[in-house]
Image (cartoon, rainbow, N blue to C red):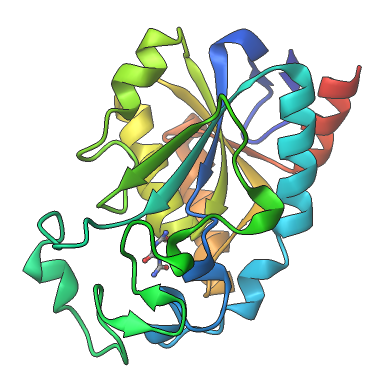
Length: 220
Ligand code: TIU
């Protein structure tokens, strides 16, 4: 399968490609979670949900592998370095009790994937303690075991967990494409800059493309 992308067309085989959905959890998308405690307007992120849902549905119909990640820490915070917890001046820190339960803690209501993109049986759901999806997780082993060579990325936020995960994936040899209308940042100029850096220098980190050509290719 080939789709128009920047900086040049992207080719992939559905059977060897995974759709990786980064951190579409209530903590980042809804008020009262981690994103808001950091001082951000979370409304901006919700706008990508319909585009993400369309891609997820089409990818499921095509029979492709789906990976959902959540930025999540163990209840005892043993996997949360103090350097991460104590950084900045948030209204609530990781592990504190908020309106959707303990901030960024596994199993809490705020840590769940939003209902519109909820995982179904057979999909990989991965809790990750870092910004990158490969740090301290079995993701690389799971993908290798499934014969995956290409990754399509969606999710939030573009320049933090998405870009970090894409860079980690690129260094592990995966050909990565970021779906432009299926990712968002609390800072629109950071999203624009991240997209540019990813595809610069002949796809130094990977490719970017809108979801429309992917949907058309999957339908054909
Ligand atoms: N998932 C993710 O991107 N975690 C963040 O903390 N992002 C921010 O933009 N803060």
